[in-house]
Length: 163
Image 1: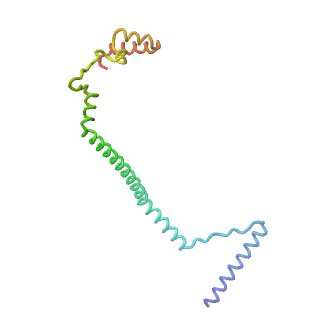
Image 2: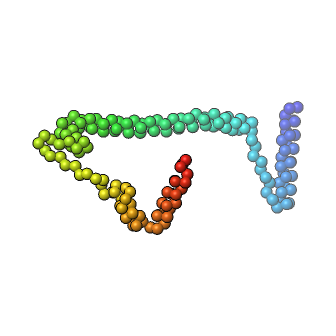
């Protein structure tokens, strides 16, 4: 009985496909084949999507941590270079000739028996910004609109002392 039912089902399916083909031939179109998505394929697709979602965050964290590690290594290299420079500078300061040269240059020390000279007055660059005749000369060399805005700024400064 089971074999008879199967054969009837198979025959009906074949008759249906033949009828469908005749209808499409008469209409001038090709029959549309439907993709069959089996339960196993759907389950496989679902599992793959779940794996992608589950691994996305750990992969992002992994890439971020690798980037942080690379940044830390670069920072350690910079620190090692700075330590090397400071050790070289420390070694230079151990040399008495270097200490003497620095004292002469920065502190204006002189050796016994030498005569030190110091020039009184401001350097020429500082004289232009100081008050007096040099400020007038500097104002004469500037464009008129700079002088105008300087006057406005000075007037504003005296009008509002809270600024």
